[in-house]
Image 1 (cartoon, one colour):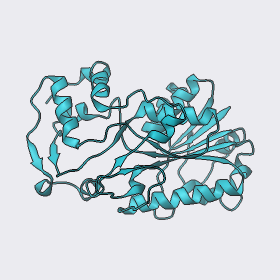
Image 2 (image 1 turned 120 degrees about the vertical axis):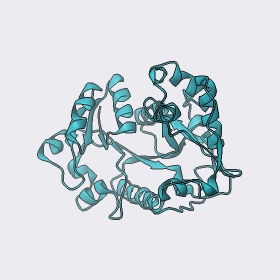
Image 3 (image 1 turned 90 degrees about the horizontal axis):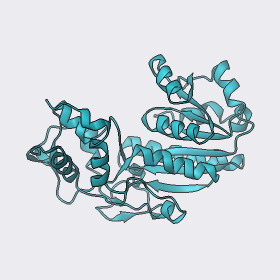
Image 4 (image 1 turned 180 degrees about the horizontal axis):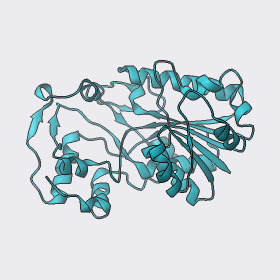
Length: 294
């Protein structure tokens, strides 16, 4: 089995490392020469992919690929891999391809005023980036249907994990407790993204799946929990309405929903980190415990 991960960044590298540990040959692409060595160290054969052309070296790797993970965000021109392969088809480049996974976002659901959503819920994307994700999901669905390929679409919530978590914000002096009435978010540990992807890949499972934790909650609660674990005072609460935020950061608060992960759990996947408190304790007791507060 040979897996290729287009866009082997934070989530993609975690997926590739777990897949390599479970017997897959893994190829991962990056735009940056600086990322080649870290990918190799994770057991992933690195390749440069700029989103514009498939190099001769990458094409040679693709010839034996059986499992494809697309983790590159679309832009206004659409999904870059679909754009490159649509005319000839995916199997023209990957003749042994059997299973495709597209990493999407729970942002496609948009705003549901805090109500629960599942994979059958209406899509109400608010931001341009979420609209682009809906378009990319549709493009991958059509492309895989044309070539009779199994397709799993994973809708991910807010991603965190080693090296990218609330403790890091405390270390940088940027931790804040922004309060917006009734606002909740889901989140997901990067290790569970990897675990869920491999779980579906090994069985060639098709469908749309929310990959998210069990416990949507107000964002300030996560900051408070992290401060408690660290033994420090949490930052003061700030009203969302008067806080200084970038337009992108503010846009996240325009979507309020509780996302269910019942579908993938019903297939037998067990989340390692189903809620944030245990997950934060785990992070603090491992590498994150080495941070220095400013």
